[in-house]
Length: 307
Image (cartoon, rainbow, N blue to C red; front, side):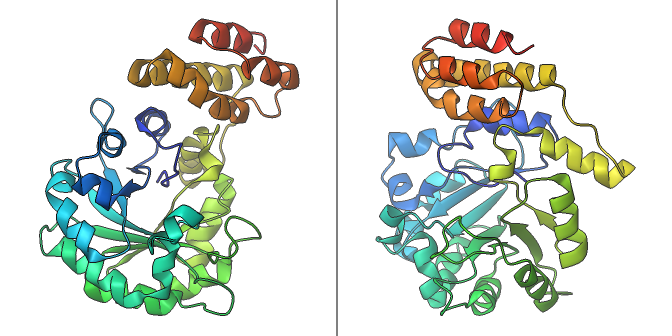
């Protein structure tokens, strides 16, 4: 799956990921309060590309109250599943009591899930961390609270909130979590430090996971979905050529222009393009030029120098 990434997993990126083999994707995290209030910016995050299927909508909230109030608007978007964010470490989210702040309050995640389950049979998933910090590792207790309330899928980002995205994910925790729920019917997914197909296969086979979410490992590298499937099916995979990397970057750019307009697309695509061309000979000069490009035509012309 393509993991939720604020500022990245919009409908253009999700479309590219699906074409490359992603089985499902999660939206950028959506404020339950913003959704309850019919916020235009919030609703924009929920827009799908034509024909999009298997879309998980991720919401964040500090309590069950905004969740209850947002359910009409949320269900109108017909999500394949509703994901509850209990992992975001960003201060502006955490200070409201949402995101990874919920790791301090397993009882609240139970109330939030029950608020969803009261209204719908759509599957509920939860994405969470090891705990708030190294002195409060409580992911098993938290997972139990979520499961007992009705969550059908649990995704562990095996870092604490205090770690943010630093250090390394705790692989042992993936194994412990999967063993804890073995035979329960609850799907256990892993996230964190999945940068190669080998990483994904190792997490699934060695840790007993049902699947993985690619996050940073998919930025500029949507090919990782195809490569991982090839590794599973054939035992090997083929890396994309420089030409395919550039052409995919250009397609991503064109989708951004179509969905968000040229000015916004060129601004938002810079971070994606830097990742697409990383390591390609001659990319340093191209990166510098892309930083000042302001039109689709100009970006395409600059990228063509790499092929």
